[in-house]
Amino acid sequence: MSVSRFLGFVVKEYRHIFRDRRSLAILFGMPVIQILLFGFAVTTEIRDVKIAVLDLSRDATSQLIIDRILASGYFQLETQLADPAEIGPLFQSSRVKAVLVFEEGFDARLGKGDQATIQAIIDATDPNVAQSLAGYLGAILQQYQVEQLSTGLPLQIAVQTRMRYNPELKGVYLSVPGLISIILMLISSMMTSISITREKEMGSIEILLVSPMRPLGIILSKVIPYMFFALINAGTILMIGRYVFDVPIAGSVPLLIAEALLFVMSALSLGILISTIAKTQQVALMLSLAGLMMPTILLSGFMFPIDNMPWVLQAVSYIIPARWFNIIVKSIMLKGSDFSDIWQETLILVGFIVVFIGLGVKRFKVRLD
Amino acid sequence: MREHSSIYARNLTRRFGDFVAVDQISFEVSVGEIFGFLGANGAGKTTAIRMLCGLLTPTSGEAWVAGLDLFRQAEEIKRRIGYMSQRFSLYNDLTVAENIRLYGGIYGLRLADIRRKTDELLERLQLKDMRRELIEELPLGWKQKLAFSVALLHDPAIIFLDEPTGGVDPVTRRQFWEMIYETAAHGTTVFVTTHYMDEAEYCNRVSIMDQGRIAALDTPAALKKQFNVSSMDEVFVKLVRRQR
Image (tube, rainbow over all chains, first blue to last red; front, side, top):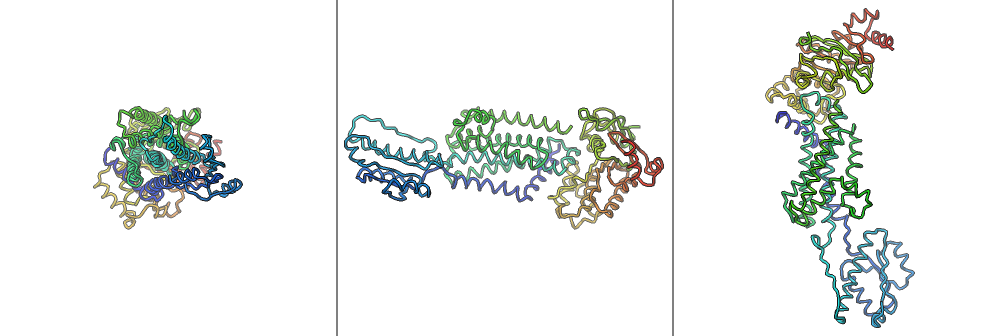
């Protein structure tokens, strides 16, 4: 096929996109909105969590511990309680996430060398938050204990934890790589499958197939604009991550772009595959949402850790390109890995492309005859 | 003979599994003829047209289109034919000029030629002021006329029209047929399917397909005489009823 014919067709595709407000909104609005949402709002970080204290002993040690907990910046004292009966209503009205109960004679017990107990009652309607709260409280108390012990006992084991690659445990470190794969998947597979099925639905595909244009040329020229927009979006998300949320890019940017291109190609070939199955835009949309977007969001390790999934879902996650791409992006961005660290994941992506394109071409031929 | 006919088909057959969609049809269309291709829905019309346009591979038989062998030269045939259907005419979100340019490009026309032909075409259709309008702004009749002209942009030897006047008002249909006559007068063969029996009267010859076979093929006058009726409508009804 001649170059000018091909370019003319690419230009046509750009016009379709730029004259359709919905396409524009999805292509340029959604990625920015999503990254800002995930960055600012959807966060699992603990900050200024409201707690209540029921201090039954009211002595120096319990006051010291409360001060330590509040000084950490993670917790905020909502109210002091005097009676255990107040705890239930407090939780029900959602005024606090946790209540700390110091037993009577706290100081006295410690002084005698007895075990003193602090009870932490935590609202576990959101298990993830509850878990983090317990963890933070435990860590603060542990540190306090170590400090106290160090004055007396000669022998002690202190655990020094160092959070590597994400010292502040920021959620946005996880959401930037995850969002890149979701946005790229969305644009590359959903948008292309819809744009190809639109030609089928309108009947224009017949006009094109009757023309001297080869099917491969038709598909390539439809796919190229989306590939371009997908990469622009990947760049935008990286920039916002870097300059708005301070997510570092430790590794090589060219390598990151090359890997993103591979992932885009695997997503595009999935989009083409969907368009050979779906007869209407509606079906293409449903297939991409249910068949691609949901697994990409839920099973790629972006939302939930893959290791904790039942084996069936773990098995499914193996055939999700985003799972491998997430590993690649996280390694390059956060750990500064080079190609020798991620060649296996890269190879898997290449494998996906070969298989998906093979299936797509086969189906396209079947459909033509 | 087959190289000289515009379309030549001998025992052309297409099966889908056990179902025979087109069953050994044979016919010839000469250069510059207006050939009406009629039949009820599901009679095999669409399958036949798709084969002749190179969209479907025939199961068996023989066919020559524009002097080229359908089995061996399908790609060359695509360059020499035009195709227009009522289902889709032009891209609604592109302008008049952009659509013309796109089709010119698809058929490998040079930019200078496309420009010249665009001017001529818009002049002829009196659409000069609409050049930069989006197709969706145009009334259906104008769209169809424009689509017909665009399908002829690369001067094809044969133009296939698949129900070109569906949903168009009678006056525009009349104008559309004037364009068809003009095209045929210039030596382009017109292969047209339609549901309107009055349009069948305008064709030089008409074939009527039924259950995958060509049930009748002649001039409208001869067919009416053969069935002893006064309109093509009655010919069609009588024929299809007799076959069932």
